[in-house]
Each structure stands twice: as structure tokens, then as C-alpha cells.
Length: 292
Image (cartoon, rainbow, N blue to C red; front, side, top):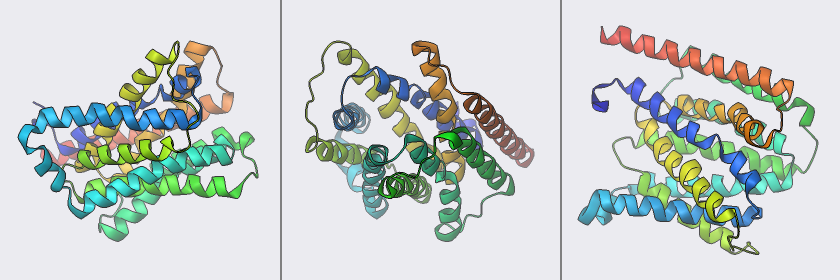
């Protein structure tokens, strides 16, 4: 039944569901007792094992053939996917969290630029409008928290945004290939890298439940869906959905830990949600018109 939907429906739905699974991520991170590198190790290792098992069951005897079919786009995807996972953590460790999130909010803009240069896929006017509105909304949310901290952390935040943009464009470029095996290899690379920096990987108490749940629900499932989504919609449109986490993440923390989000977060978040909803509605309406 899913195959009968237009590509705009498929891509938007996959990106939306993927990001919705990501939104409780910050809550699980807050509830966990692991340090940053310990979390990064498990966020690489557990999704690697879970999705690898899924791929083996799906492809069966053709698994290694599927692995070889990723080609050069898949190899570049492994590199970019691994790098932006690692640089996000390095950025947060070396600058203010607000600075990192504002840098990451540049991903849709960078996606649009890369798509126009390398894919010759011009970004629609309404998508550019949505990109600028959501970027300035994120800046508004974190304006009071921005600090002139370590420039290295800010640079790594920008690299993270660039990595997300490259990932989406590579998945768009290679939409006839399955790049999920590439993402699986990328997660293995992340786990190996983090292992050299981690002090303790023991899961004790609530972490026995929280960490595996986080790694499956907020990491494994989303990265599969977000890797598939660019086959159907443009890279900037996929990365727009990531900004939903900026507002929905604090809401989860508020509901469970009772940390009330700031007024700026509520106002900016509502603007982001309305903008993405309107953008998706307009895009879907245009798709319906073309079909009719």
C-alpha cells in the first residue's frame, strides 16, 4: 500500500516518523549515568548490532552482495556519517550546547546549497523560505545562551551540520542504492572510535534499560528511516524535519523531569512546527495537483 503513495508523501512520512523517534533522545541522555564517550560507544555499538541483524534477515544470502553494491557513494556515506556522529559530541564538549545546536540548524541551508551545486537540483522557493524561518527561530530560542566560547567547538558544530547535509545529498544521489549497510558500517566506526576514549562502559541500574532503549528507539530506527527518506524528497526537506527535535526534545524533558522550557523555546518551537507543517502541506498539495 505504501508503494502507491506519491514520493512526497513517502519521503515526508519517513522523515517525520524518523525524527519523532529521535525527539526523546535528550531525555534519555539526561536520565543516563554514562559519560559522553560511553554513550557514544553504545550509540554506535547497539544500533550496529540491531540493524546488522535486520539486514542479514532481510537480505539473507544476498547480504554481502548488498554490502558491495553501496559503491563509492556508500563509502563516502560511511565517512560522512561517522564524522558527523563524532564531531557532534566533540562540539558539545568544547563549546556551549546552544552554539552547537545553532550550527546544526544550518544543515538544511547547507543541504540546499550542495544539492544545487552537485545534484543540479534547485531548491524550491517555499523550501528556502522555510529554511530561513526555521534557522532564525533556532537562533531566537538559543540567543540568550550563545557564548563566545571555544572556536574549535563551534567549528566542529559546523562540520556536524555539513556532515548531515552531505549525508542527505549522498542518499539522494544514490537513491537507487540501499545505503543502510553504509550507515551500519558508520555506526561500527563510531563505536570503535569512542572505545578509545571511554573510561567506563558498565551498564548499571536504570542504564540497563535506558541505554538500550535509547539506542534502538532514538538511534537505530531513525537512522534507517532518515537514510531512506532522501530517495523520495530533496535533501533540504529531509533536514528540515530534524529541527523538530529542537522543540519536541525539551517538551519530553518537561513532561518527565518537569524542567519547564523557556518562553523563547515555546515561541520559537511553535514557529518551527507551523513552518514545517505549512511547508509539508504546500508540497503535498503541489504533488496532488501534478497527479490530477
